[in-house]
Image 1 (tube, helix red, strand yellow):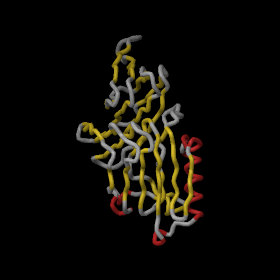
Image 2 (cartoon, helix red, strand yellow):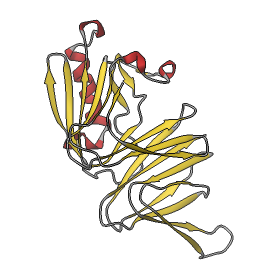
Image 3 (spheres, one colour):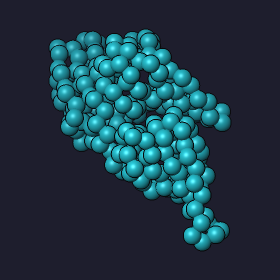
Length: 237
């Protein structure tokens, strides 16, 4: 594993570790050098129609900036042109950011570059949910101060969702599972309607990179920063 991106961790209730990148520089990289070196490999799921496409076991989400993701394989990986085409079609179908990405195909690799488009306007399963079962995969920083979030799970099985809010934009957020945590890519205001007192609302101002557990059945989140803001939800029954 090659990991040159500096990260600052936030440990949460012994359940999760949120780590966000700090002071990143162009050329820094996160790279797995072998398919077998991944954690939770015994939990990997394959796409129903193609066992060369797997549910991603990593938990990287771009918060801002520009990155390049590359999958490289060897002859023993048995990845064909048809596999790559099916993978790219799946990305186009499931990833809202895909229309903003630039794809490049080489003889034994495929890659895409993306500048954070802030295009996800409702709670959606995180992008990069699927990947090629290639020997190596890498995420390269293409622009200084690019921000990446990485989440480590103490126990496997957390569901990831995300949304992008423009400045002063709000979204209703529901707690649909027993455990629910929110990560804020920038400053936000959280409004929680009272269940006991009609018309009363509790307000909390979340700092940039803060993690809060959602214990109420629902809340409203407003981006109070001057930039588009990525918010990430992790939930588990």
